[in-house]
Amino acid sequence: MENSTKKDPDKQPKPFANKFFLIWFAAIILLIAVVMANSKEINPSYRSISSVDELFIAAEEGRITEAYIQSDPKGGEEWYSVRGYVDDPAFDIDKEGHGTFPFAVKGRITADEYTSLRELLKNNLTEEPSSTIWTDLLFSLLPFLLIIGL
Image 1 (tube, rainbow, N blue to C red):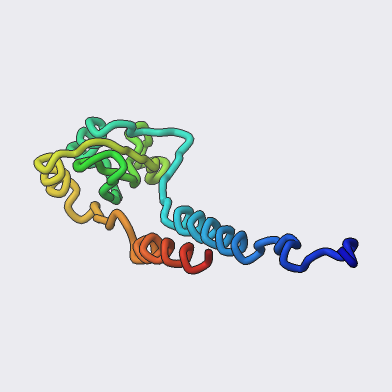
Image 2 (cartoon, rainbow, N blue to C red):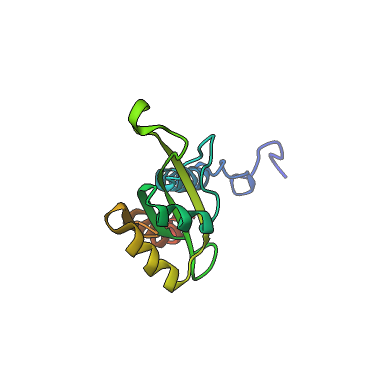
């Protein structure tokens, strides 16, 4: 114990793991950015259609001007998210022009209902994939980036 005041370099604490936290921070920011970029939900102040049944009634009446349908795997196998624009029935088209309201409906649509919805809406319906290449790429590469970064 000649020089007990000096500390052994092997026993000193290691510097703060900045690289570890930087990688986690970047991964979380990237995940939030992809989720926010892909969320196209409409949150109108006035919701004219709020259920799948009301969606079919409006489609049969020919009031839906534009609709986007997307499979929603969070809800189940036949769960879909439909958003778009519907004509306002209380709007006087001759005097005031053309009034539409946005709508967003989530619910179970069976295969037969899906086919009939496509027939009712024809060119007004656009089908969208449930995920994009960017979300698939992110979720497939994220585990490797986290493992390599650690």
